[in-house]
Length: 158
Picture 1 (cartoon, rainbow, N blue to C red):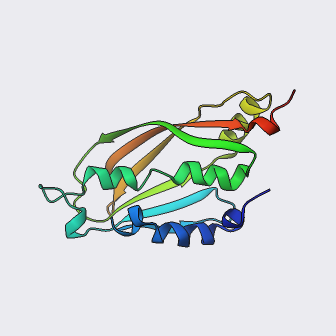
Picture 2 (picture 1 turned 45 degrees about the vertical axis):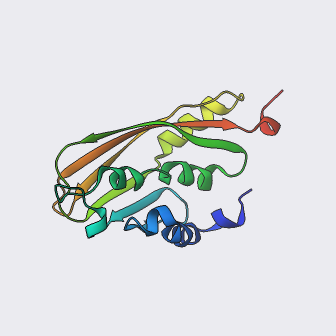
């Protein structure tokens, strides 16, 4: 069962694009599939998104990846699960001097692993990686994120 928000990817995308941490940082979800398995996020190049060196501010790079995998999993798995970020690391590869893009994909394998790991009520700690690239396709930063996924108490067996 899904909440009203997670019935369509376009609804979640519109709500998040108005969410102040995204809206005021120049972050925009340009695509979120209705099955919640794919998303594309853009960080626009604005004077208020740049650091002292003129490249994209690291906090904005990190923010553009923050809620996506958790929200996508909520859209796929529904209300039966607790889904949170457990940890994340950001690795800078080169300065982001213009607009940057991040893509997110939930694979069948990842979803099967999560379902198998949580079937008996145990937690799953899947790891996902997001590459942030510039308009030339060059790697600007990589975000490695560990998620926490577990059936809510009332849905756990036994």
